[in-house]
Length: 64
Image (cartoon, rainbow, N blue to C red):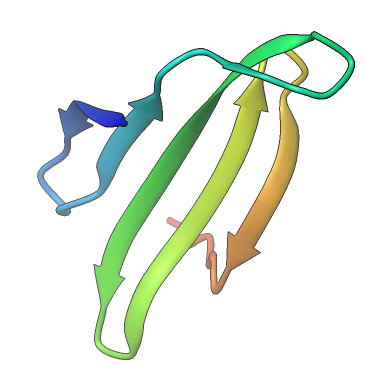
């Protein structure tokens, strides 16, 4: 199950999962950032507490 954490003015949505367990017994949660674009979505998913990125699609950083 996932839960909404925040939604930002640029429509970026942040959600997090229930606590999960890996085969070695280590507990973790997944945090996802998803932002709509003209071509679909920019997405990054990482695990806590390791901060390991497990999925990354079309993330573009804009320079100001």
